[in-house]
Length: 343
Image (tube, rainbow, N blue to C red; front, side):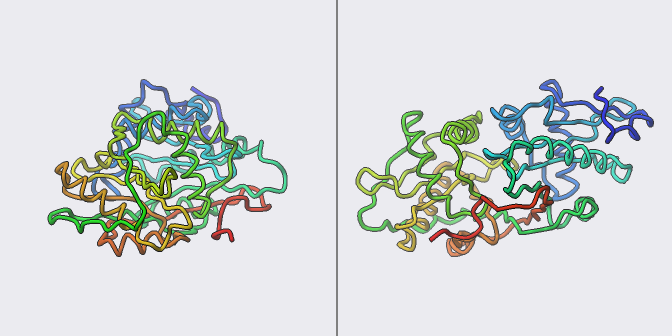
């Protein structure tokens, strides 16, 4: 058991707080899916998704996670603090309390610990740079929204899960003149794809310019570290020898094996507005249908500053669920992540 002031009240009632270990993986997944079923009606989580966090090169399970065990030894609460960038200006917290144990102070204790941990995890950020803690919740889940707001967190934007039924054959893509498709080859194309993505997403909210070494290492882990990594579902759009657009997909969504998942779609700035993004999207739809998938899905910032959500709507995708993204400023200063498209 870890002694921590945030958990003293629970400890006196017989609860135990400690870091998660790999031996807890199955129980953590069961907890997260119990919460997901209660809040949105479907189980969202599997071991792959959790391991990709726990095995992140910058993640330390001893310092970055806490679980709560009931007096009977049942795992009923979980939270983690993830540093997504270098420097870690916007750490992400993610936690859940089992629905049968809500309103007993467990969520408050976990959030208090996460806030303290986020302050420690961001201590390396230089003075004068703005730091804030981020989290999210389904927009329909009132208890979690109330908990965040009790901690003075503010909703700052929305994230949509969008889907397209593939009952009918998707519209065939029309490729802009001069574009040729190339299949990603792993690992030899990895660095080139990372550098192109980094360039493309400089125009997306929350992007930060990172040192290559730390940024590439983190990207490689998240992009290729899952057991379902399938390079045949990565397509590069080439202008001669230059990658000018790409789409990265996974065989299935974590919450629905019948839904092919689009992880990343991006087009270089000078090729935007020519139909390349739509063509890549339609290409992925067709590939999913050939593989027997019933739907295609993705996640998007509803207020995406490049207009991505409008592109997905144009392609026929519809909003299935919405998350609210919350923020708590930890230190005022200059915002170094992208907020508007640079000139």
